Image (cartoon, rainbow, N blue to C red; front, side, top):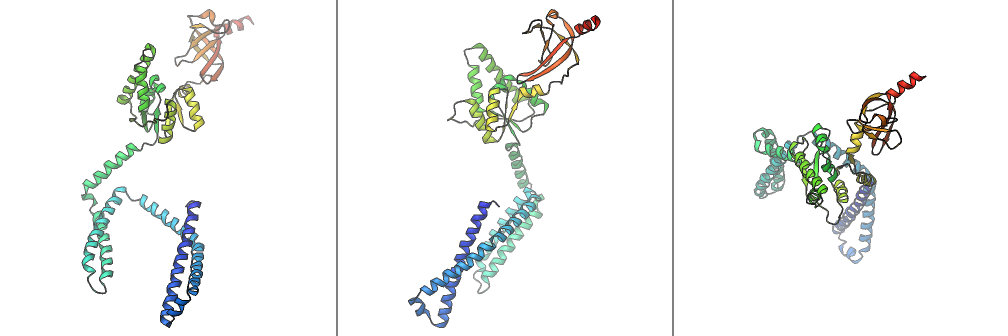
Length: 373
């Protein structure tokens, strides 16, 4: 139990003890006065009765306040035992048992209406019969739960629907990652679990881009819609469109962050700026570009590889080649090999925020320098 709640319970125990003590002493004084024939004296001078009642209430309140920690510990122990016991019982059994208990108590209450008319023992008998009927209803329902398939099927459907609704971790897509298209391949591998969330405002942004007068934007928007349609049809991960919107926020990125906080989900993106804003606001991000860089094969200095020199580098004499995964290879002295496929030796590897860059030199030049020496 939290400290604030414990304090409230202890104050409640103090007030309850004071009320009980005040009433008990007041009633005791009235009973003693009635027995001794002193009612008139107490009515004429009520200060004695009030003072004694306040004193008695204070004593009872102090006792209740002192023993309240023991009561709180007892309550916590009972709560822990109850939770542990209920966890071991299937939800279907609990629901069926509650239904049987309610039916039994209702039948017992109806029977008790007639039992109250019996002199002397009618009230006590009504309580006993009501409790017995509640136990009887609970026992009968649990013993015949296998025959009540209509109830168990109903609870099973509800539990499955709840499992589908309460996904373990929502993955929220932004516009850039949908247009990028690599999310389809990632989802098909099974590395994404939970559910893929497509916000309604992201769909609206894709529609606006697809309706743009600019050809490039229009093609990007249509590609995003096609990718989204393909995700819904081919992805092994459930895809859910969420219509929740935040009218007071204009920017889509800000809406994504607020939605991720509300759903306690993660944003999938390849937008560098959105990634940084999410990190500042404590929203988990799955960056596809970082994933792509992480799964690229590790290359160490001294390794040999084959590369096709495609173009000039920024520095004099450099040539540029690319691996199949898009990693750039800068070959020193590779300009004269433009258009050729040659063997190169890795000299160093540079990891940047934009990706990985490999520096190498032609293996042929190393052989020639060795021959000269």
